[in-house]
Image 1: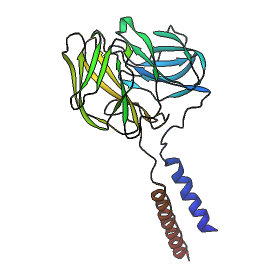
Image 2: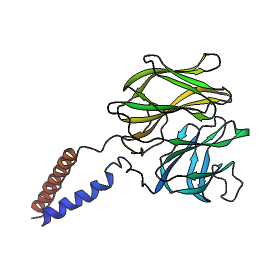
Image 3: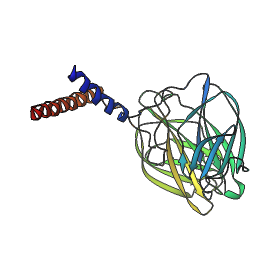
Image 4: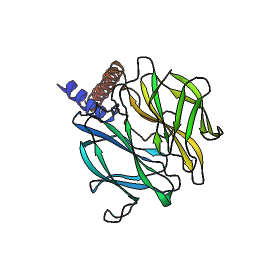
Length: 274
């Protein structure tokens, strides 16, 4: 009996440390919403939905995790970080969310003209063996932009500000990606070695302007079929969504090993006491 109690104690210590892993597929009766801060000269913001606080101090270049909301009409508001909930919002927008859909709600534009943009996200899995990606143009004052993959013939179409291209399939790999001004063909940003993994859906955001350099921000939308990433906000290099859960056999072996150590310590203590 004591052995099982020791093992249960070890398990109780380990379970809270198990990685959160991936979010479950979206509830088909609800919508998924994440918040992005793409305004280069605007400070951190607090996010409110229907008058209720949702996220605090979301900073430039940050994309939050997805949150599940009931389908229907919702009031989305951004306030300067730390501002009272009763203060006037910097951005206020009403969004009608459809069940089973996913959305990115972004603050875009320069601070003096800050406004909200809503993008419909496609979290369905890419074709077998492929990745897929789209371009979002959030670069202030640059006009329409395009993306060029130097090692591929894939071309993302000209995308106006603020707007999003369709999702396109990509062969997995590492590519040098250029952000181009569509009107002149000049390079606004050259990002070397952006990695794309099979089965992963990406949004490639052109951000900057208003005194900030133009930069390509890769964000992970989903891994597999409607599996939204969880973890820290994506800030480049393919996002920061955590990987797979630890191998179950490895976790089980670790539990057994720790339980054995705990039993050995308990036996030595009893021997010393006698």
